[in-house]
Image 1 (cartoon, rainbow, N blue to C red):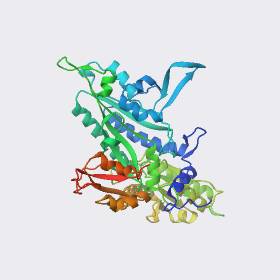
Image 2: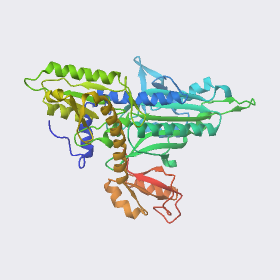
Image 3: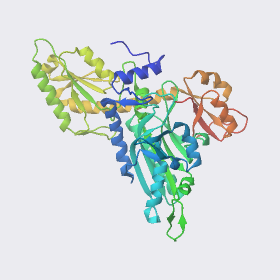
Image 4: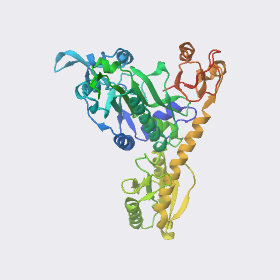
Length: 486
């Protein structure tokens, strides 16, 4: 099979090729949509499993809402309809007849949740109401790329209502931190978890917080958001509750979500010229056991030993240095028993799929009572006695997880430049390849200049290391992250 496009000079082509060759996705017969294949679905399911546990642990309940939303609902909140109007897919006919009122295929479900909140919330005792939905949504994108931006995609959307603004703000911060933990500790991707400028807020929000990652081509990728919604939603849908003093009030609302975009982020941040590199905590297959068959050797005995070894992983439980438990239902192990493919072809296949660890056992290894451990990161082969292979392999998975985050952080930091004035980075920004941290006076006029270069302020940082605005001579209020984005 021909080599993948060069990851350094043909990054976009490399991405498209690797997600198809590794069997994550296939093209759909519907414009801008993707078919997520079993291996890609398994990655997403592992992310869902971790995040769903976090969502439930923090006091939220899962619900299921309709796919179709009355168009009038979307039109109730002015900023919301303005923000989503170009992306809406509208159903006007059903059952062979023109509908009295068109339906929108949900781009997000704030309006549906808020309609029901108005029915369910009557008293302060009904608050907080904390709900979450795992669903598919549709936004009519003009330029699409699998996982990163598609017409239809999969996500979770949390929607909550609170008695006070302070409680709502705490909710927004809590879920942002849960997302940061998911992305950094499980996906091994370093991110900025900060607030968006006003121009980049979610349509209808008072404040939007984002998870921004920097991809190997220097572009930013928004990997999740957490919003403090304006009270206009509560007014628009007449959501009111009687407080403990018997006075009617409008609740404070939040929403937050992450999508299958996380899969694309993992591919881009960790992949290499051989294909995918998946973090052990999320990889559908953490270990592949590979018997190396030789002519004249006892193939059945080799298969038997490999099966016994797999069973040891199935029943063994060890905890790595980070505290992540590998063991029953966590050690995801397969045996590649194909006797027709060469070892080289098998190595290529599993490296392409990004499996973190490979255990090779040949006839000579069997005689010596040992096996060879080979990691996907290239940290080095290890000869390990068979009676210690489970412990060594699980420890190695822990090492791989930590090393992937360290490498990704080093790479991310090398793609960010500290700059003072726009003239210093304008020409570079036009070409792409880097993100920039600089100062900003928080005036709209200075921000607009970036958009001429197809760049934006991705988030406002908590630091204030730059003394003046990158565009004017006014003092800087805060540092900002500037980049082109997916």
